[in-house]
Length: 180
Image 1 (tube, one colour):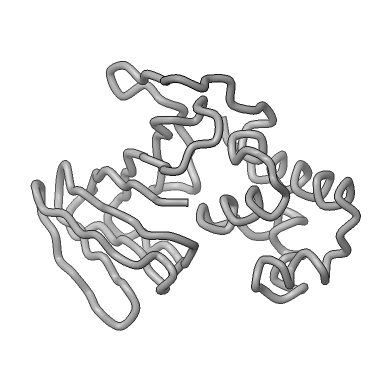
Image 2 (cartoon, one colour):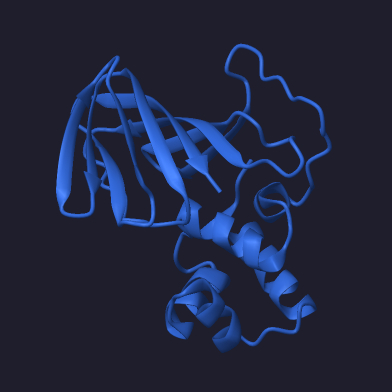
């Protein structure tokens, strides 16, 4: 299970191992040193896009950053009945990783569940992103635009723009695929 404090400590250890100062590492991530320090101390939860950027800068598998163990599968990895690795980012926002055990993955497919009333921070990351709504209604903010999606609707967008998903029903469940 995901623990903010464990992830923050792991990132700090990896940063130190790579001989980056807080300032150098923050600059590589495109954020301020103060903001990075809040993430590394565990004071502030790290957005998922930033976690993947951290893994890229450190040249480690994102699974190692998140769970403390690297991926092992090189040919294929199967997730049966939606039983991937579940991560509760915070109350009302969770996702299931559908490929956490695949080495050198280029895509990050996840099943995300967001409860009504939860407003995630706007995030941005490299690559592109695809959202497909499975249940409920979802508002997706991408840059200056908003898209309203229901079950069966999808959206493909430039993930370098600030974006967030917000449930417009009791909860919304959707598949997201992030290109690294």
